[in-house]
Length: 54
Image (cartoon, rainbow, N blue to C red; front, side, top):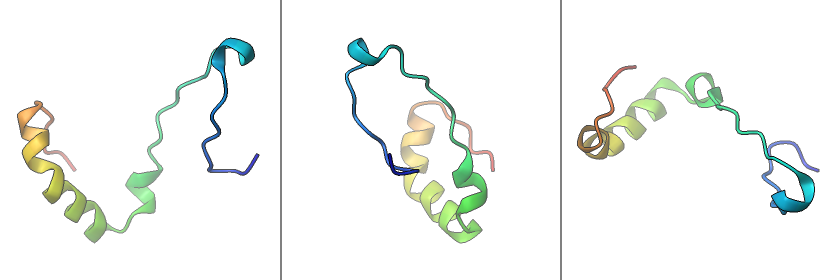
């Protein structure tokens, strides 16, 4: 397996797949890129009730 690459597998043959929150984007993206992403996503964030926190 290659770290950071999602591998598709049959969960019925391999058992449950753990789901983990990934917060690396909060520290891995420069502040300007996070702001640009939030700006683009903000209309949908408001529509679906997400807060505009940083």
